[in-house]
Length: 115
Length: 107
Image 1 (cartoon, rainbow over the protein chains, first blue to last red):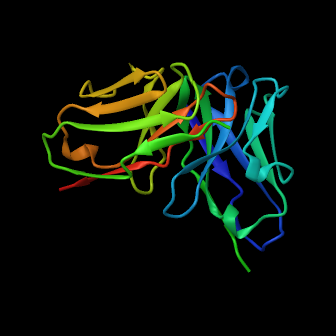
Image 2: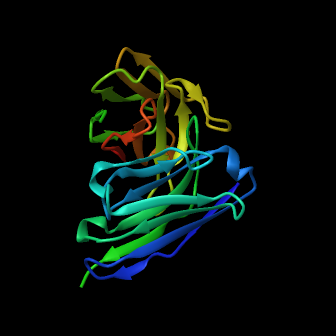
């Protein structure tokens, strides 16, 4: 199993960014997938998750209306579109697979929101 | 949303010690509770799921238990590799939540 995130970087407050996660080594279309973030020196925060077929999606309150999680099962890819970014969104963003708990994690991609 | 309260936030212990970390849920999560270990600069690693089931390849010195809405992670005899930060997470609700973390330090 491998999860590889990309798309992180430096963005100004109010800007947008799209994170991608390429999955391999398992049948992507049969798992819930999730994004978890970790601000510098802080704990883990669950951000969003999406059902196998994309028909059910959940977000943490702090990103509702600004972030959109999606997936493309044909491409074995997970996405996180982020708009109206704030300094408080600065974090390492992890793509992860949900089974009983979260059993596989990517290496993370750093998003820095700063002027 | 379900709140997870983890304690202590920091724990100092020595190699060979038995340590316990506690996580309390604000409402029932049944047994849908996982524990993770994280080392600096690395992704978390799943240790226990279903409150007490050890993930494959995790040493047997790690164990988990549940009493109602209170969950515990116990390390029976600390090894040097165990000094890290530990998190609990509930997955009873589709809106998942983590505890604040417990940093296990060398005394």
